[in-house]
Length: 199
Image 1 (cartoon, helix red, strand yellow):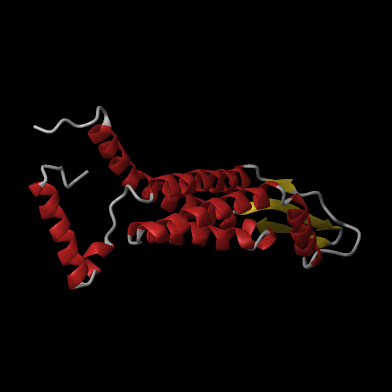
Image 2 (tube, helix red, strand yellow; image 1 turned 90 degrees about the horizontal axis):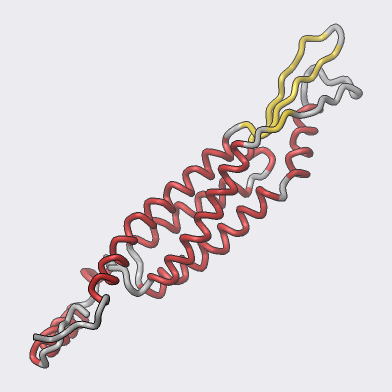
């Protein structure tokens, strides 16, 4: 009976078990970032004597239109991990790292764009007279959710890069008959030589 190096089979099973959680978490990160961008990040009420008060709100998308676009890239990347070759999966991992870092930095340093979007919203208000610019009441929750989602996506992108060759691919059934035959020959040769073909 052939002895296996200690810990190798268990490590392979642990690696395989990471596959589904990583993909699902990436989908959740993209979805959360997109949801956070659609929520109100700052609000204010424009008040003028003799005119009705006018509440104005600014969403993450209003302030930073690139945030929902990057969130959709994360979702697309997660789906690409499911059915890609090892090389493409590695490239997707690199893309996820870059998008995650860019998204997190964009949200974390986007205070001026939020202020500019609020200023535009106030000036578009029917109650704005030119000298009644209110202070905005900012929400911390949704920017933090968006930033955290992008950070996690970047980390998981690194996991995809590391595990790209260890995870199963769905593309084998689409290989040419010659490629499938070569694979079967390799399996039989390994068995004939007394090696475990699953290693």
